[in-house]
Image 1 (cartoon, rainbow, N blue to C red):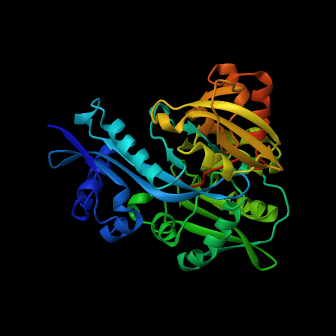
Image 2 (cartoon, rainbow, N blue to C red):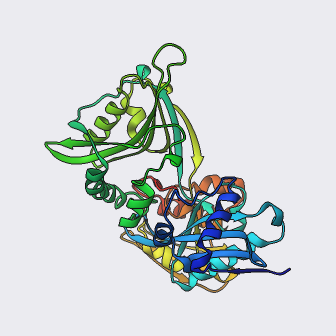
Image 3 (cartoon, helix red, strand yellow):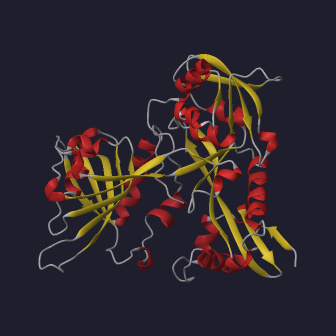
Length: 407
C-alpha cells in the first residue's frame, strides 16, 4: 500500500502521540499531558504523519521558535522534533519523504532555518543539518569542588513565583547568547514548569532557587534531588536542569548553593555551556568530569536571509559556493560582503569562488562555533587558504553559542 504523508487532523492527535511514544520505545500515557495542552503546544499544521492505510507509521513535527544569532537578532527557526518511523516500516524512504515535506513547508513559511536535537547523530547530515552548538555533561562530588567568588543571597521559591521571575531572567541571557531559543507563555507552562511524576525518573519534583543582588533577582537554578543511603552514608544526587545567570555573582551564588546541599554530594548537569566559567572558579579543574556532546543541529534554508541576519567579527568580502544535495535550490554561489560588522549576501554567477562547502558545513559555522580550519583539514571545506582564513574570522562571534532548550 502506498504511504501517504500529511498533517494530522484534530481527531488524530491521540494516535499521533501514541505513534511518537512507540517510536521512542515508550508507552503512551494520555494522562501525562492533557490533549488540549498538546494542541496548544504543537501546531497541527506543522505536523507530518506517514500513513499506511489508517495507521500512522511515521511522525515529524516542528515548533515555531526564534533562535538568537550573533549580534542578538531573533531569527525564525523550525524546531524539528518527534521524528520517528515504525520499526515495521524502516528503509522505505519514509523519513526522507517526511523531511522533504517539512523543509518545503518551512521554506514556504519564509523561515530561513530549521534546527533539531538528534537522537541519532549520523542521520541528519544527509538532509543538510550540521552541528551548530555543543554542550558539556559534567559530574563531580561537592567535597572536591569549592566554588570561589563573591555573591549575593539565594532563596528557594515555589512554582508560582518561578512563573513570574524566571522568564525575564531567561530572556536577558537568551538575547545575548547565540543558539538560545525563545520561550513563550505556553512553553513555560507546559515544557518548563509542568512537572508530572513520569518526567522525574525517581528524582524529586523540580526545585527552584533564585539569586538576588541587593534584593534584585539576577539568576536562577532548576534542579531535582534523589537520596541514597545504600552505603550507610548520605550519598544523594543533585541533578541540575538549568542555571541562568545575568551576572557573575549570580552564577557564583547559584553554583555555591547547588554544591553545598547537605546529604546530596553528587552533582550532575547534562547541558553546561562549553564556555561556562564554572571550572575557572574551582581550584582543581580535573575534579569536574566533563564530556562534550553535539547539541543543536542547524539547517540553513535561505542563505541570503540567514547570513544577513547576523553580525560578523571581521570586515571583508568572500565568494563561496554551497552544495545542497537535498534541497538543490538552496545552494549556489554567493558573495558575502561585511562592513562594520554587518553583512550583505548576494547570489553570484560563475565558478570564481574562494571557498567551497556543503550546506551542512555552512550551517555548522553559522552561530560561530564551527572551526573552518578543522573542516578544511578534514577536506569538507575546500578553497583558497586566505579566503578560508578570512571567512573563519568573519563567522567567529563574541559569545560562544549554547542551546539550553532540548526539544
